[in-house]
Image (cartoon, rainbow, N blue to C red; front, side, top):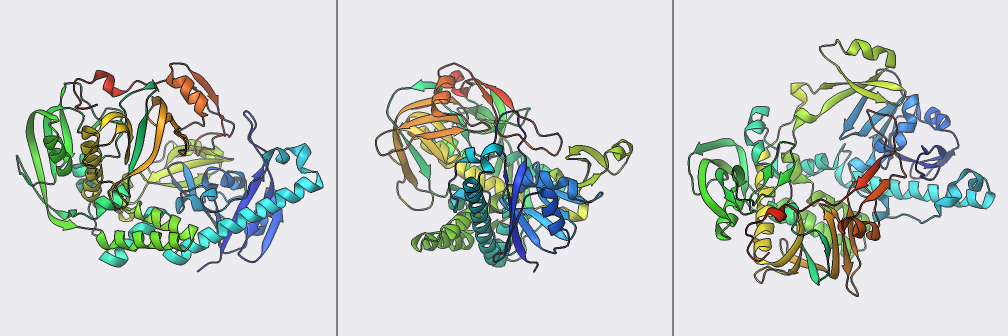
Length: 532
């Protein structure tokens, strides 16, 4: 195995309108540490080193500074706008965030005053010494974390790939399906339920409860597997249903833009639901005039009980022993396997860089397409070859996610004063009396008690904690303070200017400026929702 090394950069502090430039790089091998004042010097150092060199979030930051030093016609691995892998000579650079999608601070990270990173401050000897120590320690912490991951799970490109490899050690080779199979079953594969039942400023006491390891809990059940299934008009014990009905919020519906909603406006629609969701809707009286159009039943079943037990025990053991890294990795592996079954390799592309002047020729190519400009290079892309596509079983992933949505719905329906839900949690005046409260997988756990909420939209809220409970804040896509979210929730608007530039594989670094306003909950159109 190639040696494992890491790099990190210190840059100008983030300031709106200023693209930060690196002024100090660190490289660490686990024993040897080097520093470089210039990016060119680091690139020259890496050029002849046959090693795997990781940078945390490198694919959306550090690697973009190194792009001028890669060779024309090099291939890049890009996933969701992140450079996961690229090469400088013999050295392969990888983004450790692809295997460890957590901030480094979740493991270890020192604190520092970034004001001393300003050009006039960092030249002072005392400040320079602080910065050098901070950089060195970040490299040490990252190397520790990456080395522990690789030591436990091997060299993997992504966390989902590592999870699949670990499961296959238990189950044997994962059966493959086809693109046609995926397209047929994909309508049943949906994500988590995220919904505002109220918006604005809410001045009343409420509680937030989470499901303990929601997806691992669902994975303990038996789910559809294999490629053999039967389709009929109505099968009472089928795995999936196509249902035409009026739904009172029990069923997911994917709109024209792909977003997920849970309509309860009295309109008749065709829904694609799992058995778990159909049973939950029936049990809670959330269906009107239902007509089953199609039922699909699989011949085979699969359970991930041994996989879940293994990593759940690993997490508990690591916590008992104070092994922060081990607990983090076990938690990540527990929650990353199910998504691999729903992955669509038609979304993946091969990428290659080439001189900008050659982009025009790409436009006429039958093989490559123009993907944009990345750093000083043109970027071309093409679909994966059929032999490289790995189709797993989207039906398995669909059943797992549907089971979690069904549990969430049952609890929402029986709870009182529900304000908000997000995948595996609810905020409500009181949780269902029948909810299983405890530490077991799939049980509900009290996260905190709150006295006030400002809900501006999905994943945009602040919950003010009672004594002993910290405030809970979410502001996906932007970094807003609790006061700013409250202002938006009250009907105002906040202009948010991003301090850090967004690095993209298609555009030059840019600073995002957004006007944040309140979005109304779907429940404004509610006609009936039990106790809500």
